[in-house]
Image (cartoon, rainbow, N blue to C red):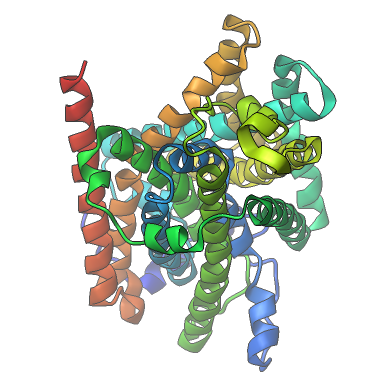
Length: 455
């Protein structure tokens, strides 16, 4: 990283209109002056929903439900720790965008060498592709389960999702936030209902939030834990958060305005990420309550769909309605994640390589980059969901491996006094973020060594 010598004010003044992050929505939402706490919070509520979606996308489903099915409630502690790390990092990400007027991708490109910036861009693009693999597979399979449409056709339909996003952008960013919030509500309500029917052990759930040493020593548990971390703390969300935090109009010459924006953006983010934590916990609890000890093969969405209507697996609560609700929630998850994934792809492409092209072409390109490998696998494996879904857990573990490459620049930038001024990270924030990053790197190295040794 180059040592930045510019002040925050210089960074803002150099950020021309043509170089704004997501220029068409940057600063598009007015913040009422002199409004009370709740009215101001409502104005800032919205970006957190889009951020939270990334933490409950279809990639979480297999890893979390499989975690419950294999290890009962033990990995709830991983969900909790991951969620706390996510809250910390997303607050830093939002603060970076609000203070500097630039997103994480733009600042990373400016403050690294040409080669370093290119390598980080490739890693970020691969992370977007890994994220989209889960979203595309999840949406495609949900469409197949609900409408009996071939998987390849379902995947092609997801490629057209970008056109829906373009239409929504014309309606205004608040409309996007409202639609995504509705989809998130569907997911939450479906799993609350299904977990309620499953009647899980309350004492088991409480005990599951206490970390166990076996998570580190058991290779299978560690692999799945890293999958949960990768599916929960998403690299692309850090880029997204630093950009959409700028959708509210803030006077960056006024420190009180900046402080207010940071405060309410953080509250919004933490509330929505708490809901994501609830959803991820429900997924794991559902897996533990219904499938632990059944010896069922639950490695695929189709398996889960079928199991929920099979009395031999889930008992008396089995019902086709539960299966259909599962598919509806899966489709809601995939579609809401598609919106945020496409926006993140645009942010990364514009920020790192400054690619200038029409918005529709930009979004179509980012989507096609992700759809193509999944489509190739679908054709190669002749529409076989089992083979295609083998990509899921691996993609989530890759996200965990890619995460430090987004966290490290974020911590460096938000800890830079010359860049952030008085809004620099507090010491406990900086050290907590560095600790989480170092631990994650060590765990990834350990997992790789263990995997190679076992081959």
